[in-house]
Length: 185
Image (cartoon, rainbow, N blue to C red; front, side, top):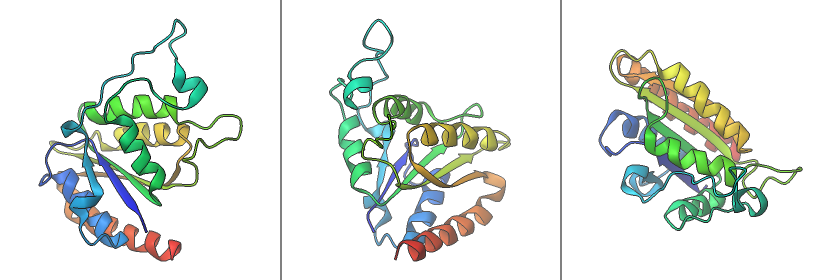
């Protein structure tokens, strides 16, 4: 089962990576580090809202005109059976790098007129990990779920976590991965 995890975190040893690795282990990823893309280390520009109406080729051709790492990552999403989006929570919302990626993703790869733009039916899990007091994780998860649904992805689960309950959520994520793997077998 091909799996890709898109992380809005820059820390491969941080809480968001730990939570993501648990899900990937449950999914049967033998080397989770090879399944993860850390967006802050990639070249991802923000949406330019190309034409006077605020759109561009994203609306008519399901692609973005910006030449950076965006389409390469979308290709990996397209090839995957399971897609994971994971983010640290900042100000009760997505990280800036995941926000920039998803702002373009939802424009260029949302379903139109029954066409899933090649991305529908992808089993998708969202993970939002808050440090500090952790109160913003549910709001972040709601924001992420809305964007993924607009993009036509099949949102299997959204897992808000906070540093205070991360040990519990790591176990939940591993079991979630095992369940998904069992269902896809």
